[in-house]
Length: 175
Image (cartoon, rainbow, N blue to C red):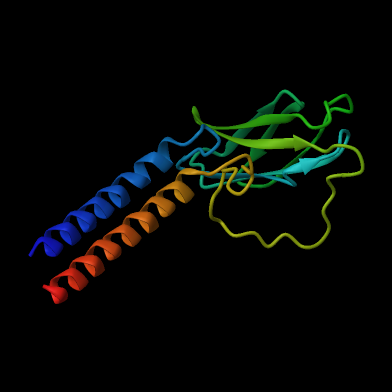
């Protein structure tokens, strides 16, 4: 009977963690903007003097203003993409914030200036998916993210719960 209580407690704990995880992800580290419109900067890494393509999708007004400390202000009209030339004196290895403004609602995306031999130029057709606009998903390699920590916690809780149940069953069979 006690094993059922322990398993129930472990299950309820796991459900609580899963319920809280989306809120923790939404809070994020500031690099993940959630907006009512989509936007992107391509490529995400570029050499000084290079050209990036700026896109926006889903803004109700006919224009979106794009600003950054590394290029002149660009206006995207009626959902058409635009380009911006990166300042030739942009610091190699630095990351700049690109701000997209749709009628006062702002979203940001990171842009990294290439170091050394990385020219930041990418060839091939762009056939991107309209998911994750304005995020830096996959760019944080410094440590564990919230998703990895929650997943690890759930795996540990599940393993401990299984160990408790198996230990109780074996102890009950010997008595």
